[in-house]
Amino acid sequence: MKIEKLLTLTALLSTAAPAAAQKAEILGNRHAMVRIDTPKKYLLLPVEEKEENAHIRVIKDNQLVKTFNCRLATDKADYFVPYEVENGELLDITFSGNLRTNGIINDFACLKHMTYADTFDTANVEKHRPAYHHTPAYGWMNDPNGMFYKDGTWHLYYQYNPYGSQWENMTWGHSTSTDLIHWEQQPTAIEADGLGTIFSGSAVVDTHNTAGFGEGAIVALYTSAGQSQVQSMAYSTDNGRTFTKYAGNPVITSSLPDFRDPHVFWNEEAGFWNLILAAGQEMQIYSSSNLKEWKYESSFGHGYGNHGGVWECPDLMKLPVEGTGQEKWLLLCNINPGGPMGGSATQYFVGTFDGHTFTCEDRPEVTKWMDYGKDHYATVTFDNAPDHRRVAIAWMSNWQYANQVPTRQFRSANSIARELGLFEHHGKTYCSVKPVREMDAARGPKQKNPSESCELVVTLKGDAQITLRNAAGERVVMTYDAEQEIFDMDRRHSGNVAFSDAFPAVTSAPTYGPLRQLRIFIDKCSVEVFDADGKMAMTNLVFPSAAYNKVTVKGKASVTVYSLKK
Image (tube, rainbow, N blue to C red):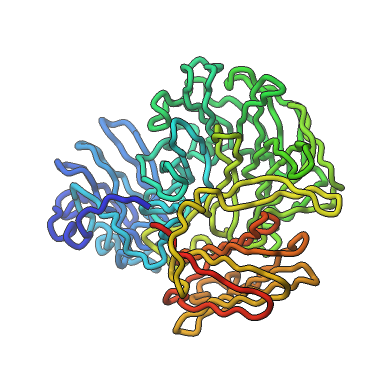
């Protein structure tokens, strides 16, 4: 990921002016204020992950202008996060906890070590940060959302906490790419307001100015998560760099507590916009001519598929069925928990859609999964992708342990981009998943052994076992049973697995016919496996102490290792 390298944090702290020694005012056992009086750009906040969130109210000219939560350090700082300041602001801080657990407020590390600085260091300090997967420069990331393509650029927005590396303060972070591999960090796009924090949603290119914001304006629909979850809108006239909130928000409301993640698309056949969102244990479908007024059309999901957890992050698209000349509709439904390997996962349904009602072609009890690893969730596609492509990206983690994975500067990466399609097997229609063609262009020269970031191509002629190993004896073992048509990955001894009881696992996938070639993508903290024909995908995190630098193959298989261009 392309990130501007600034001064090291150590150098920053040695030259920064101490804020708290000048301006901290203690108002009670759990209450303090810090007045901002500096020409510098940032206040660096010390974070200690074991602490509870402190609540921070930002006051300017006697008006409340912002609120956020941060795990401010009481004992020692694990890392720092930047708050971009304005002179004259007052930070009104309320701490959680009590004297028995946290001690005396006068001794809190955060009040002693808050510092001003002109810059904030984002140089990578994490050995597990991927080389060719999207990650935030710092802070927490979960669901990808609001993704679109325009004028040669892919725009990826994501659920983001800029004030710590655990879930909190949901805003839309923003990154851009011209090749779906190298990502450039952009300023935060949509921040919390009086309606709530900013949960997942989607963005579309309004080519024909149906909303009245201008031809080619970017219109985002997202969930405002306040006391209730409602759907709001914002628009951009500078290709998604900055957004203006719609004055008529919210645009869709409900009495349901879990009512979120609107995904909008132009329905060419129907001649209007459709929106699908998650409503508890079902998906609701709406229609609109102008992206502002929405008509409820129907619901889907009662009795269908897996209901082990809350339904989230839907998507709905029309795709060709390979080799048949037919087209069918694919409905994506992310669920947490309830995944086939525990925790969160992406299920899907295939059927017909007329702009009003989705009808599933399978029996209600049938459940189909897009990816059989433990670390594939919140899968959604880009709007306006060229050549009618359906390009998807998933969040590469699992809610069972996402807040505990062994990184701190950042938490979570996204999967490599995937091309979606449909194929038939034994009279049933399934979703195909392949690495996007941009990954072919990233392939470099062959190399003898695996490295921390590489691609393995495995040719199969029957049963096989592929083992990745490092000098510490840590290993990932992948097994293909041709007769049973099953592919397994064992990460129980892959490296650091102790941070969660749910992490050590063997994941297993049906292959829907024989496998002939596998593409295996390794990138420091992940192993993603694809059948070259798209019939099987498996995404798993790993945290080895050193790179897997040896691969052994048993059975009817051979392997070729390729470097990947960074």
